[in-house]
Length: 337
Image 1 (cartoon, helix red, strand yellow):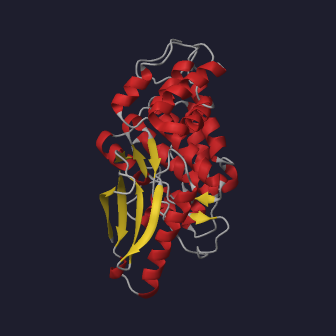
Image 2: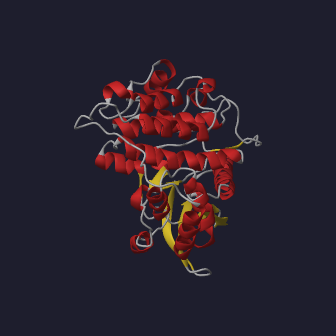
Image 3: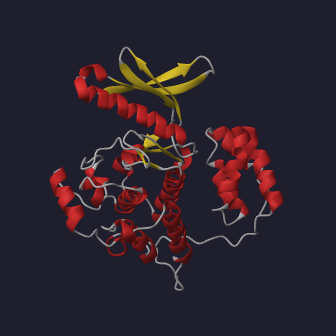
């Protein structure tokens, strides 16, 4: 139905991605619906200004076909990465999901529900930096454009209420995030099936396997987070993306056992390095601004909420720098500690 081009914006001299839909292949109401969907994608994504969300620059029509001009992401989808490499180590999966949740939390705070969170819509750049794309079926909480009883989304990652065409809110995105995290940890979807009908039946009536039992290296705490995210009833899930992210960090801190670790056991332990002072944060912001500009202040503030040491802070900020050479130059400025 469409094609994506790499293009050049001559006005501000930057590469962009052009997402063009061949709406001329459609007729009547179907064409109007596609045009409206793309307008909503531009509207929703443009409101979600966040480092982990693909930026939308423009929406327009070309010979009756809608197109989006958007940020060109140099990377691959999580779906492709899973197909090529299989499951992720627990700490890597959590690091990716924390970025996804940070982006979703930003969108949810302004009333935007993605509704199609899945590996194909999660892009990974160098250093596993996340970029979420395709807000094409996103729904504003104040909008009445989505018809009641309409099932929209991808069955393997849809929440039960979304499968039934019921109204959805941010907790539906958290269910989808839980399904994605399950797949990153296990290498398989929580409810596989040969048809969408089989998948839908299983996610409506069955419980996902216990990751702590079936996947080596997954702690009971991490498995419990995934299990709660995949709860059938929205009320039994996390109340917000921020709450789910906080829960993800907790089992990581507690996953170090009192006994020696087995050779195949993955354990994430917070560093006991010195605390981050205001001067440390100012120095990091000044160094980062050389590569990303004024947004450095926002990135440092966000990283401070997650970093447990000075080294962790600089590593988190380095992931925000696109080019490897610049990233290495930035890290060379890191003070000891």
